[in-house]
Image 1 (cartoon, rainbow, N blue to C red):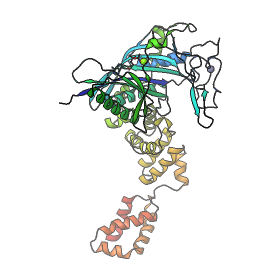
Image 2 (image 1 turned 60 degrees about the vertical axis):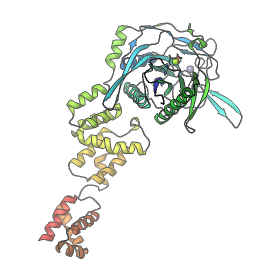
Image 3 (image 1 turned 180 degrees about the horizontal axis):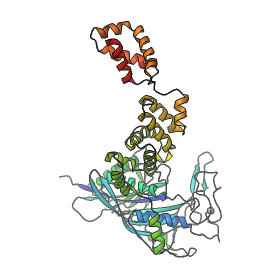
Image 4 (image 1 turned 135 degrees about the vertical axis):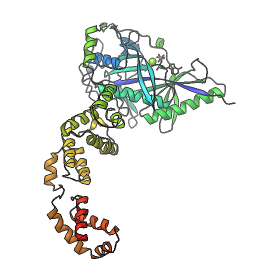
Length: 478
Ligand code: ADP
Ligand code: MG
Ligand code: ZN
């Protein structure tokens, strides 16, 4: 009988914090820029340069820790993690080993109607490394230190996940929470959120953990799912053949859908960690934690509860609208302006989502204003424009904010609701289509649809079809 295996997964997630300046110097954290222009003696590791901690980094780390139910370490410090690599100019990375800022937290994930807590072992602060640029043409590698010293937090989970689905749910929950806090934009594809997946397998029923591997270079949820499936199979195959799984770091190649060994796994002792003598220990006061807690924005769980009492919209809408702070803000502001929450929600859930997907944008990238959205809802509520015109106007304001009322007026997009003007059109349409008139009179009711269509066309789609139908019926039946 074939043995059954369970997958055990723990994640190490690096998140770039949204500070304006680096963790230990005043250089900008702006992405890009000509190589080595966002640098100074500190972040290029010049001898004698002294690091000074950016207070905002600590505040963001504490905010993320509070939002993930962690204990905050009152007295924490930084340690040196020693290793040589050209993107690491000091030959050590300033990180935290002994006293990380946050410990023993958890986040709750939901899959279907099941919830599960995923433990967070710790969150520590550290600096990012530079980037090597491989120049095949010149056959050399160059180094760009612009990213060196950009602040990171590393969120280390307990090995509590059992499937790719749980991993994705955990990452989505972390991303949403951190985005809500404004601590990072958490973009996997741009590297502001990076997940290393530690995976082992064990026979169902055993308590002992199997040997794990760590996979790097996973920059989309799809890549993560594929890598998990492939690594699980690879390890099971080894075990079935009676071979050991080797504890190592593997690099996932998403094009080949295959991972290969990068290096054998180092232990903490390989890095010869020791407390960084250049940085003073940090004391985090009760008052400071209380202040950060108080300034915490309303997170999704609380928002959901408030929406359920405040707005008459379905739970499904509430889930989606609150999944992103920017979307939720837009919804709340536009609803307050026009007083029709369900209609605002329809625009956000329908056209907005469709266009975001089509243009490959995130909700953060939305430039749509609550005023524009509210004006559009008002115009359709008053029946001043019909739904197809509204969609066109929406597509315009989705790209750039406009003066909706003026735009509709100037482009002549308002409904023709004036029955005397419509009457002229209808008379003309009836004259031009004697066959349809005869058909209708002979009892072929289908002809009515055609006549309504022709009349709509004659008004360039600006009439109310129901009104046209009524007028046509009046004329034909008289
Ligand atoms: P290291 O210090 O060597 O990086 P840690 O104990 O800090 O190792 O664990 C790193 C990550 O690996 C954590 O997210 C943890 O949950 C996960 N992990 C540890 N052991 C296993 C295992 N046997 N299977 C899967 N994941 C594991
Ligand atoms: Mg580790
Ligand atoms: Zn610098």
